[in-house]
Length: 336
Image (cartoon, rainbow, N blue to C red; front, top):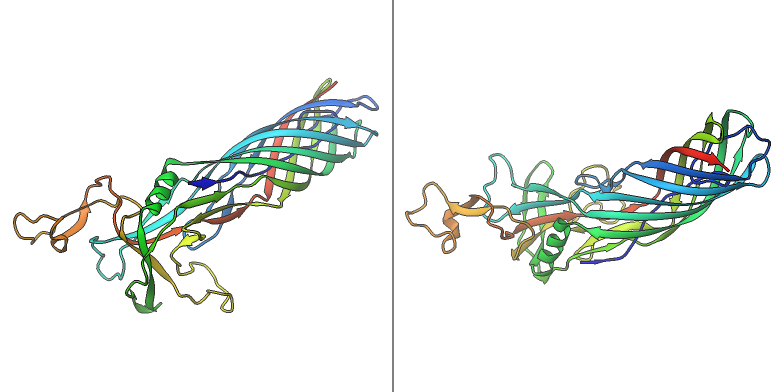
């Protein structure tokens, strides 16, 4: 499986090591901070479940210098690790029974995509409104650069390996939304390719605000909210595209958008398979001694998993997710 690296974060204060604090001196130049932060999920809404970077916790240290009573400049570095999830795979396995009154028998598998580790490096300028008060609100803005690295999960590694050894063909969906849907005969068979992840390092700019509350001499509690905008994003492809197959939109589409009206369809993988859906067992009225490896027409896929990926019709959905988002931080500042 191929991949690169990626992702985000930031901070603000005087000569410190994380969100802020305050003191009673007229001007204190050196501050040290330690902060902890929470970053909400960033998701891509698609036809399946939401694929994206899950909520994550992290830590950050910073050093800041106040060059006037109100203005300060801060440098910071942090660490964060978050999971990437809901790479959704849908499969209708060959030989699987289809429920009554339904045209298809797809099963859904949500795969863990792996882990994204980020080291944000930031330079932030800020303005404190009440530098000598116990309660001191502030605004801040700055720039930064985030170092990112991606580690695939066992599930994604397995999916990628299975794609690399499978043959499949796009199978167009026919019929209407009011009934009669079915798959047309498959198109030309092709060798499939595995999962590729691009998680590049990314420059960013950020802005936000918060407040410091003095809790003891030289110590302050800091609460901080930031929004960060990155120039890059996390991108995962399967078989060279954001999705394997073209799924019918589950939400809304704009009719004049390219591809909004199809064609829609799944990939029929006849050689190989992407996931283990079970095993073939003889149907109730099958002749005695039926061997499903020889006469699969007398069998159905209702048996236990056998560790072998199974052929069938598949959709896989991944895509691109921006790093942009809110960060909520709290921590303590010590004034030197």
